[in-house]
Image (cartoon, rainbow, N blue to C red; front, side, top):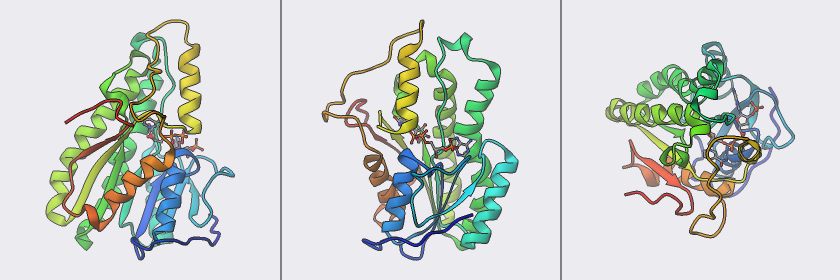
Length: 256
Ligand SMILES: NC(=O)c1ccc[n+]([C@@H]2O[C@H](COP(=O)([O-])OP(=O)(O)OC[C@H]3O[C@@H](n4cnc5c(N)ncnc54)[C@H](OP(=O)(O)O)[C@@H]3O)[C@@H](O)[C@H]2O)c1
């Protein structure tokens, strides 16, 4: 575990203790940076640290795909933060394949573990503390790709759809305890994982082509675009919001 001092800016979340999975790069790193700027104390995790991991947060190595990983992370959160007020399930992703039948069994399992069950396990470990304190915020990260259901990513999309349904149900269960649970669904966002996955997709010999149209707002998303929406959901400004899914995609998949 390493901690390096840093942080400035508005203090809307001063005194809050936040755990963000997958904070070493991409959207997760932007969320960690914005949380630090808002005054929160932050613990983040990935399977390995990188130079892009935000300075100022405590970093602990963990693999969230297993129950043991979730338990280790929950124990680290207790040790480092003394409890969690804000829980962000950001770690996610999957490699594309040339259609559903080409996705190996172990990758179906892996996609479910990373994109769905990791959140279920960590919530089950950390929500009880929030219930005792009768407050807390949980943010799950899905994907705007759920609207397209692209065949190369059916393992990923199926897991994210399960996550969205679970998130709605958990919101109803925890609302009486003052805990808010929402989902954020990013559109195409410029991150190391996102770019690498889209390159893999473009190289596939078979299977449907990817959607390369520019979103109506004229550009792909940046990690901070997604993090801004998440920070709003974590703040008291969103105190009457729970059980919702916020699609942040530059207008690519209009809903309502
Ligand atoms: N970028 C997009 O276009 C886009 C679009 C829609 C949805 N999303 C969603 O947004 C979230 C973040 O995506 P991103 O593009 O920022 O991804 P990214 O650049 O690949 O970053 C993913 C982060 O999660 C960590 N991670 C991956 N597997 C992990 C595991 N098993 N245990 C712990 N940490 C793990 C990674 O570190 P390690 O690899 O070192 O573990 C890294 O810190 C994901 O849930 C993704 O599905 C992204």
